[in-house]
Image 1 (cartoon, rainbow, N blue to C red):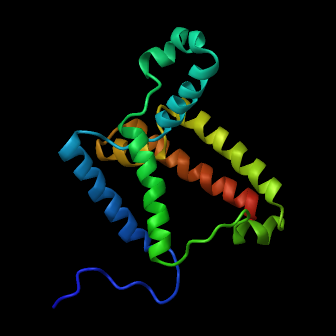
Image 2 (cartoon, helix red, strand yellow; image 1 turned 60 degrees about the vertical axis):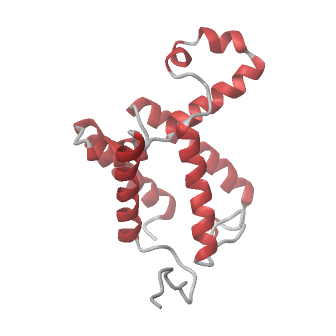
Length: 177
């Protein structure tokens, strides 16, 4: 009988980026064909903030022009983001690379074993990333995957900016190592 499930790698490690990219492309095509939805994630985080704000200041949310356009709710994008997290967990468990750590090895080699510095930096980077995504009208998944397959010029410009920004920050943080 022919084996359908691929063998697990002998050593833990990341998926081949070309295979990962091809799978992401196929998933995007399936998403458009079957449910007519393009990938995007950054609006989910804004909606999550709106849902939290509803608990403390519902009048402010009701009067907010953005939340009138993008209702704070759990929708398909929430499921997409949850699926990304769940898929990452399953993938890391299948290739045996899953581990809980406060400081990744690359960070430890450059900045030492300082979890608070790592947490503050990661949070600050996340805040900057979501501000950038809102200013650009989309995140890397929205522009990089969904926008580029629609041949949107703005998505290609945003994609180039994501890569250049990532290269510059990696160079600054890790000094080319």
